[in-house]
Length: 174
Image 1 (cartoon, rainbow, N blue to C red):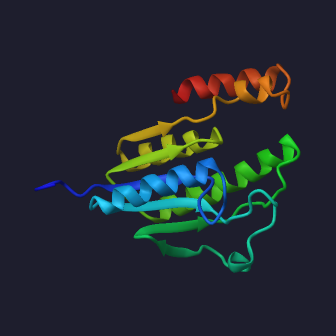
Image 2: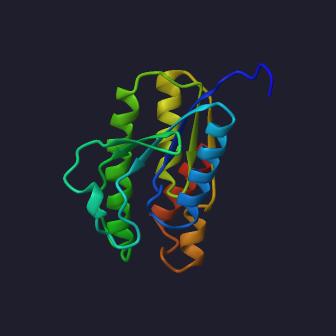
C-alpha cells in the first residue's frame, strides 16, 4: 500500500443504510472498503424510507443532513417518501431525489476525482452524467438493474412509447 494516491470519490445512490436491501448493502460495503484503503468517500443519497415509504424516525424534520458512518461522509437529500407500490408514485420518488441530489452535488463544488453512480434507478445515471460534465471529471455508471427491461419483464411496465424513451436514455448512459 506504499505511496497510493488518495482518491476523492463521490457515490450517488438512491439507497444507503440504515435502509435494508441489496443496493444499500452493496454501496455501503464498497464505500467502507474504499475508506479502509485510505480514500475519501462521500455518498449523496436520500433520506431512508425504503421499504415502508415513511422517513425513518431519526431523519424526520431535517433539511439536508450530513453524517459520518464508518468514515464515509453521507449527504442526505430530500425525497418524496413512497411505499413503492405504484410505478407512477415510484417515479415521483426518483425524480424528487434526482433534483435534490443534483442540488446537493452542485453545492459541494468540485471536491472529487471521480463519480460512481449506482443504479437502480436509471435517473442516478443521468445525475452522474450531469455532475461529471459540470465538474469535468470521469464517472462510472454501476448498472444493477437494466431499466426499463426488468420492469417490462416483471409486468410493471407495458411496452409503449414511455418504455422506448427510457430504453433510449439507458443506451445513452451506457
